[in-house]
Image 1 (tube, rainbow, N blue to C red):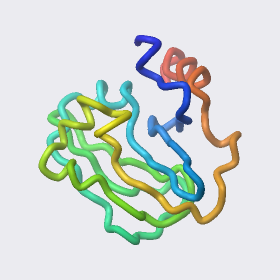
Image 2: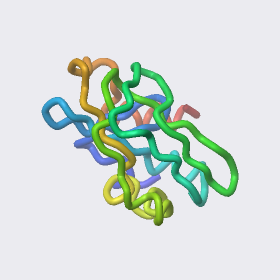
Image 3: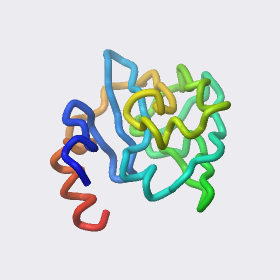
Image 4: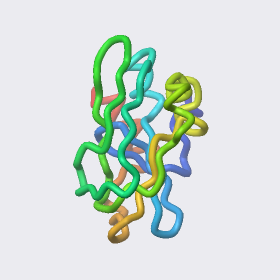
Length: 131
């Protein structure tokens, strides 16, 4: 894994989502590690905009040539936006997981406590340890 594959400005979950919080909205995607484990993503089953989710709940499903994987909410809130580009171009999750391959935005019900998310260094150690 290269240094650049885990951007330091983002936070991470142990279920391999990345999180960028801006005010009361979190943008969520899956990490480069997760997309490489899934291999070629062929379908993104979008979450309904406005859907209310609990922390740790499955928000939507990604289908790859290898498996089906849930994408989880790092916090409670409601889905405020889904990446509509993924409907016709699910491969963006593989090609640009931290950019054009973002998956959904969550309007947070409350701030995410910092200790609930991993820093890039903590995530790198988690993955290196087989997480």
